[in-house]
Image (cartoon, rainbow, N blue to C red; front, side, top):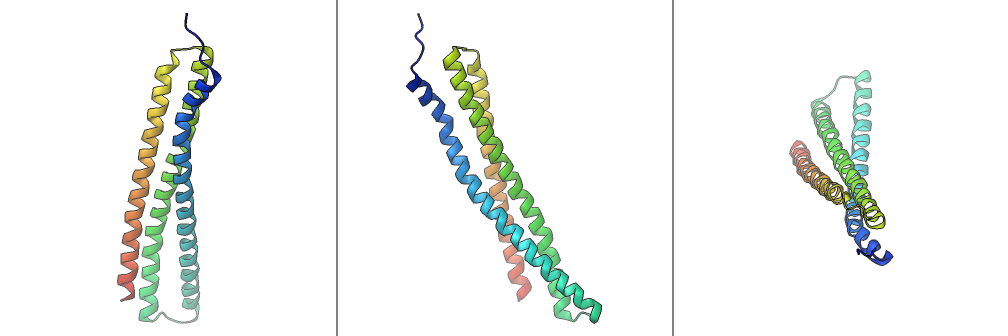
Length: 159
């Protein structure tokens, strides 16, 4: 006869996805900080753009103002794309956390109610969670690359 596992064993099984939840939490924290920084930079550039355009009402632009306005517009386009990448990474990590929570709950249900048919669902949920983490990492890596391109452009525009 199959003995029901102890509550300690069930908790141990349910904590395995919990480690991934913690890891995703750290990734989310970093990405949320990056999101705030990029959004703040967009707001600052938008404010500078508005001030330059406000000057246009008073007089014509000089060469340096034209160059700066073009630089700001290009940076804003790149930053909006970058913030979309950060958003996608955050959403991927959030979906991963949800999938790991569902995995953990499914493990608990499978052990408590002795439903061996949930093993396939548990494997699928955990695998989808890992794919979602991978997706978030890819978005985050690409966002880092795009951030470097923006910095290169900004430095080149200042020369």
